[in-house]
Image (cartoon, chains in turn purple, orange):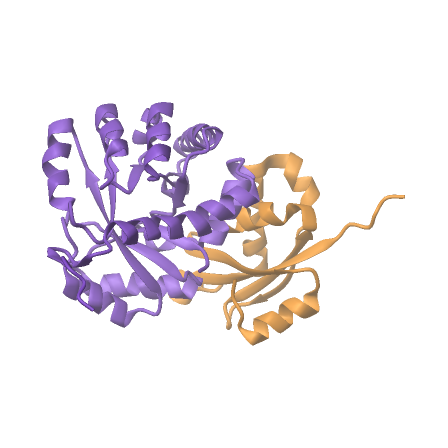
Amino acid sequence: MSYFESRLPIDFDKITEMLKKLEFCEKLGIKNVILEPKNDLDVIPLEIKMKIKKNANLNIFFRINLRIVNLEDFKKRIKRYNNFSDILSIESLNKEVQLQAAKDSRVDVISFSNPQIIKTLTPGVISLTKQNNSFLEFSLDSIMITNKINQSKNFRNLYRFIQLALKYKANCIISGNSDDLYDLRHPRALMSICNSLLGISLDKAKKIFMVNPILLLERTERHNNNIIEPELRLIKDEE
Amino acid sequence: MEQKERQRYISFKIIRENKIEITKNSLLKSIWQSIWRYFGLKEANKIGLWLIELNLNEEYGIIRCTHQTKETIISALSLVKQIDGIKVILSPFKTSGTIISIRKKINQGKKI
């Protein structure tokens, strides 16, 4: 497999817009994409998945991102994901939620994509994700803004916290996460930005953009070995 | 004796809004602006940027730089967002050490 765009927000209600975005990805030469629904879906329906896979010439995977406010909310919402076949990520400003999510084996990714949330990253979360073989996610969306002051602040925060994660040898993925079509970039280009502006060596950047997303997908597959589809599970394999 | 400086040729796709014309001058200006904005003088003097070809019909361009600044140039190209107020993406897709091989690769339509 080649480079991965590990987060592409898409509105599953607008099929034409979605297909246009995927076509644009093909034009850019992106081969592997992980799609995330914008419209707060809990589970992506099977028909939509099939329809997308049929219409695009890309390797398409799916993820669900939960934006969680507090611990009670987390405990309540995570119950639905015991048998989940896609990638599950958690995004929260609350450190308790982050720690709990990092301990929870159902959670695959703790996302620090938001410029506000990235500041809450602690060595504790990094350590727990390492123990649990889950992943930390950073996003380069915040550096594509035009306002120079905000852009340099975002660069600084990304640099600081990516370096912190690398220092503790965390499992990281970095995504483009761009909503606008013209903010999309090929992951190889993002790798260069990481190398030249965020101080990540090319070897590490390659691992982040090529190897870690595969490991993440393997992790979800391993978790859900017996799950055929959400709410449909193979209990006994009769040969 | 100092070694001769090696060069890299980078080809990039041009994806633009509404297929509006872009001149060589405006393209180079925006690439230099991006280099200055993100890397400053210290990197800019090492680059040796040269626009070899701009083909708007087939939507690609080729630039030349020194081999040490390849990643810098790829980043600078990727961070260009607008040319003359038109939204664009300059997406690097092939790097090579010789102009012959990069043209061959463009003709073959190979991508990274």
